[in-house]
Image 1 (cartoon, rainbow, N blue to C red):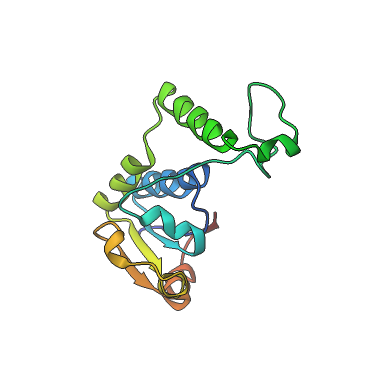
Image 2 (cartoon, rainbow, N blue to C red):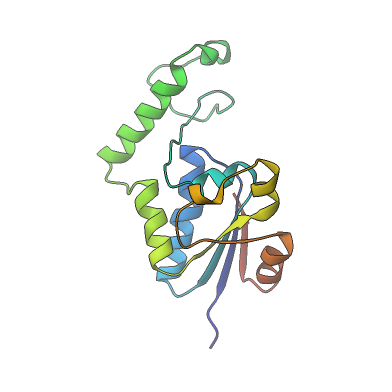
Length: 155
């Protein structure tokens, strides 16, 4: 029997946007899936060696805050830092693995991490800034795999 396939497009480069692709991929590969994640646009940030991911309450009305924060207040300098600190603290308190740890698990377990070549070129990324063990390709690379995948996700 052939392994099930999971194809993911990761398009967000934020702390809260980093968890879904890496959690789902690491879980799926542990369950025997063949997994590929295609990192495009801002999601390409997740392949940087040095992650500096943030979370913003701006435009994120579902983000739980200790007190209700009106949208206009969310533009105040320092609130993004506070929201990021609060999220990292909560993740640590609950024993959730870091993004770096989840990403390492994905690499070590054979998840194919694909950097979108068009995005690399578009934003003048330097490939030496990316982690080891990734591949690159375009939309056709992703679609060739996703066309036969059992599950395809856009995150």
